[in-house]
Image (cartoon, rainbow, N blue to C red; front, side):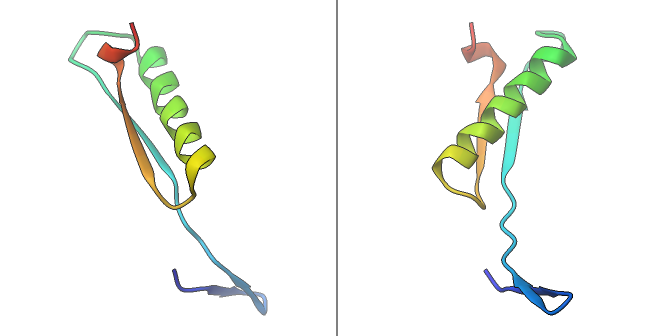
Length: 60
């Protein structure tokens, strides 16, 4: 990562992304968003600047 300068302060930015997937009509949007949120927190618990995927079919 390369630092980004903001108001004379060097910041290191590393995005974390949580992704969820489901078959069309297999779950509600709320369940899909909860799965993406769970994936995001899983990434943040391990290391920043990464991504994780949760398939909603595996939640049941």
